[in-house]
Picture 1 (cartoon, chains in turn blue, purple):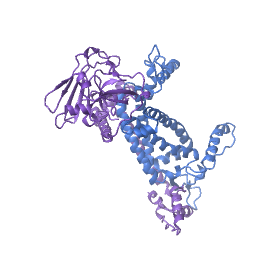
Picture 2 (tube, chains in turn blue, cyan):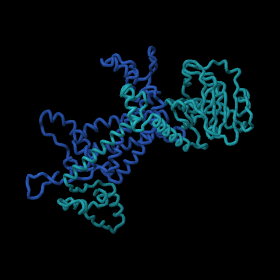
Picture 3 (cartoon, chains in turn red, orange):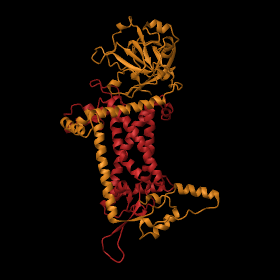
Length: 266
Length: 335
């Protein structure tokens, strides 16, 4: 949205109209989430290795009872470059955790980043309030209809491109469309649930009421495990859609300003 | 930065500014006075709407040079911070993990580099140790002697209780000659107690509680025995004692060699009414697999504090050594 100097047509624009999109604290906590969640996930998987939740009766030959170890062995059997892999049962943990047999280190790192994650969550909430960003995240009446419109848009996007037919983005009059809003609204909630289930596992006697909220200690572990996969599942479409949306969207999470001044060109 | 003032501009003036500020610079903005609504219920509803309703942001006009400069500056700052954060987090990883990521020689080269900038292995150990201490302090602060540990019904007992002796259960030949040695007592002399003295000389308590292992698994089990608190009042510890060290001299390592096991327990936890010196499991005398003739049952601590086949209890003023703490785990382990 660059403007040109009045009276001098076709000159280089000298000024730009921008709007504030993200508060500094929101931007900082957004980027800090990446290494923090990565470290929590990797150390969490090393902790999971010590006592897997999803198990079957031990295999008579290998003694293995862990479905994730089975999956690793399956990968090593079927992917040629891993045919010679030394410990197929550890493949998943070697690639998606700090490693096997590192419980003490993994717990230590998990505590450090759990406290950082909580502190970062507070930074984010303060930023949301100071920058009025929470207003854009609150659900509204039009969300249901808009969600269907967005799903329809994304489903038809590729066929329309292939057939070279025009395919218009639904008109969005707010900072986020309904799909974005529900995703960005639910992430802090999932973060809070991760923290709560974490405390439920960490202190099941002193904070037994939190464990009880999730159905007791053993169920809290399962919640905590799947909440990690929700974060992992969020990242993939998030990164793809930001990349598709373009430079301004990425820049606004760094600089804070967006040059999309009116909401209708979202 | 004009963003600070923007937040306080009421909706009406923001909307009007969209039309009026086309060619003005951010400094020219003057906030309009907040309109006063005379009827109170409307004011409240209006305030709520202003608090919750998303508003169109106020565009500001910046010189392109300045905006590009800001963008470059911020991307540089964020980029450098990202590199710093990644390096720091890599440095925090366990040695095994780093060796897998960077290779053996690569890892040691990076370690040398880290040492040059003051990030030594000692400093890392100290930092991570402080994290464990901080978390232990949180656990100690959460602890209350009046808060009871959840108890369960006998129908909820987990079948086949794991004991983590790793197949190296001690030979039961130690049981007939077993004595519990008490040291660090107020009397100044040591005591030797037999299993019969402990089983018969104290009131018997039963509880069905959950044992939570540091590995993550847990098991509900039915225990019986004397309260640690009762032993403490029968044989009071020396003045100023704050800790107990419980040892098992019969423990074996995974190869079957002697590997004495020891844990530290703070006396407030030892005095909790649900802390038992268990003599019974599942309504029967304790089996050798679960630490016959006496084990510690402290359900407000991780399983690793629930030491089996206790042979000696010593009271200390300062915190004594703890087997798993010496192997990188935390020390207080309150649940």
